[in-house]
Amino acid sequence: MGILNILANDIAIDLGTANTLIYIKGKGIVLNEPSIVAFDRNTKKIIALGNKAKEMQGREHREIRVSRPMRDGVIADFEIAEGMIRAFIKRISSGMLTSRRIIVAIPSGVTEVEKRAVRDSAEHAGAKEVHLIAEPMAAAIGVGIDVEAPYGNMIIDIGGGTTEIAVIALGGIVNEESIRIAGDEMNNAIMQFFKKNYNLLIGERTAESIKCEVGSAIPLKEEITIQVKGRDLVGGIPKTAEVSSVEIREALNENIVQIVEAVKQTLERTPPELSADILDRGVMLTGGGALLKGLNERIRMETNLPVHVAEDPLTAVVRGAGKCIESINKYAKVFIRKRTY
Image 1 (cartoon, rainbow, N blue to C red):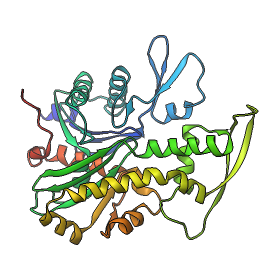
Image 2 (cartoon, rainbow, N blue to C red; image 1 turned 180 degrees about the vertical axis):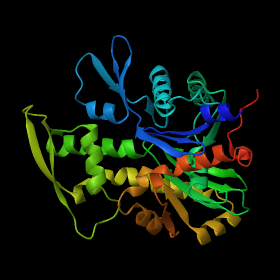
Image 3 (spheres, helix red, strand yellow; image 1 turned 90 degrees about the vertical axis):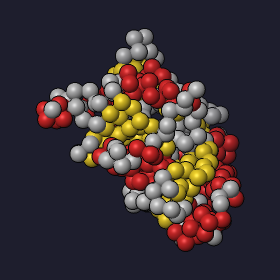
């Protein structure tokens, strides 16, 4: 039994649209890589994944396809997603047997069919037992909130594909809002902005770095100007445009307004006792989107609630799922139960 314990490790996975993070029981977070796969178009054989595949993105030739199998927080390409999960698990489990238990964090708004797809992928990757947990619940556990307590906590988890807003109390989600407006949509808004205003075609990676560098939700103390390289839509030749953080903020504004509206809708449906708790305790922001400059301040101004950004918001979900795998019996109640028909 002792040898089996060493060889077969239980793992927790945050299967995100932008990044996949894996936590091994007893070891902590062992993998944090982009959810991107490069494969041969003819044989479907995986050539590279994670960071190496991201480097190829937008630079591949006709024999190679670089794909993101996760879209809007769910599996878009079943075969490639399964290959990616399997390859990531193989990478971290040198010498180990296949994992007996896997906990996977998924968006709270997914359908039964999408849940089934995630379960099947994890089982095909070698898991004997698969548990699913809602991302906002995992994020709350990850940032140290006592989810079993009889008071309300509000979590806003902004990932790559979805923004998850949930009010949690007594070990369950009281109400939730899951919208498919998050990091990817923001990147898309930046790409469209350059097309429309500068006749400049830029790639997803460039849009992502612009968002991280100068993107903001409120005016900055010092506005920044940056040089952006892309392809001229008129002449077809490479060109450079100079843009300011003010323009990028305008490009992102529509998406930010939708996130704020979803937060307000969730608050409107929250029972009064829990609303009072949220007013006292504030709102917790997690996920990569929490790092957008001034977003916490913008939500605070629009809702009059204290808004805190979690420490290391990118890993909050996988840390929570990891706590669950460390004490599976303690957290059994927070898993998404299989629907019985």
